[in-house]
Length: 183
Picture 1 (cartoon, rainbow, N blue to C red):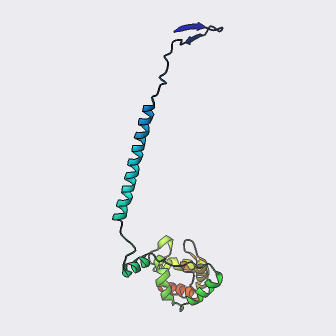
Picture 2 (cartoon, helix red, strand yellow):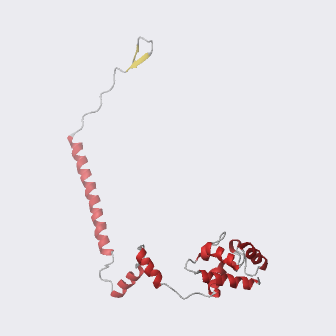
């Protein structure tokens, strides 16, 4: 190893005796590598082929299912419903789905009781005469309470969350609740 001083007086180390790299690769090594590589590829292809054959042997045959089994599968995979987006069909569907008008008792039982029996989300309980008296006075009577039930009030959705209730059905339910509250 020799130290050579440059013009800037910075030491520069130069290696003058580097060993020559081993550049001699025999053709036998290349041949051995190719044979080994081909053997590994053959082994991998053999394993893959074996797995495919094993899977074909062990897989159940679906094409020989009985008609009863096919019907069960069809029933399990059938769609739950359909979505109608055509306005003309929606009108026809609504006409078909028309129902008999509900009484105030039916509306209360099916819709209103879920919240007004337990006071859910600050809904006045059916038995709370003071709360109903206050609300009736603030709304301007039974007609005002009916209008707020139709539009929705605070946490209560419009029409109590059942959009197909008519104004008369809502009015009957409001009158029933006021009667039961003793107002």
